[in-house]
Image (cartoon, rainbow, N blue to C red):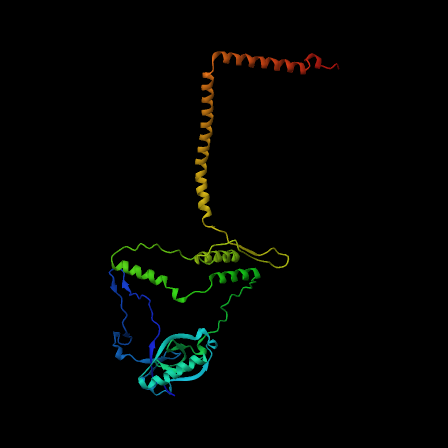
Length: 355
């Protein structure tokens, strides 16, 4: 069965491209194709291909030479097998295209292949020619369309030898438990909600420049350079930040993991309520304290002064006779108290002892 198809790009690049200019006068910098032997620019129609060998010699390869090569997939897309998508290494995934039919004759086989892929829950592995090369591809169903993903050939994927850290590192159960907590806190995400914030900021910058306005955006914080960090502290901070970003309240939940034998627990996660706002409250309380003390002191002083004033007024209001009587009674009481004291204590002479 053959299906006449057309290939349409399934992705697009939104990158903002720049031109090189001469900074002194904003003149464009252009690259020209110049022949080294003649030292002059040449037209695209005069440019061909050549292979450079190890000695630097150039071997011309013409379009006729390429057309004569045995390339059976030049005008077709040949399906080799049907496999599970999980068998494909994501490292092999490349550009994506949509496949459409070329004419009404391709509608029936196109639909048959699409429905067969849906029912089998598999993908098709195919070979096809594109841009002068035979390529490997994967066919899968996207809605009502068949999509083609370009795959790298297996020998084009490099081995990761020597990339992983060579240092011997021990990961403790407590660290893994905290990492699990972070993963659960972050949870899942809808990829449609993610956006290129740098691209948006760059568009705003260009728009401001075009309108003649001065960009007001403040530069973002630059990531700190490589440094040795406390992994447990970093994980705890990541968990706290993730919860705040998701709008979750930091509860009194704690995740405690026991350490190795003979050691204290390695990690305890305490999510404190309102952790960030505490310094502000303390500062406010510190500012209010002196004022509160002054007010309290003023109240106390005011109370004492008021009591003294009332006593003075009462004293002045009493009749002269009462004042004298009160004075005599007080004097009599003092005299009686002195006599009683004198009786209780022996005289100074009687207290001496013969030696």
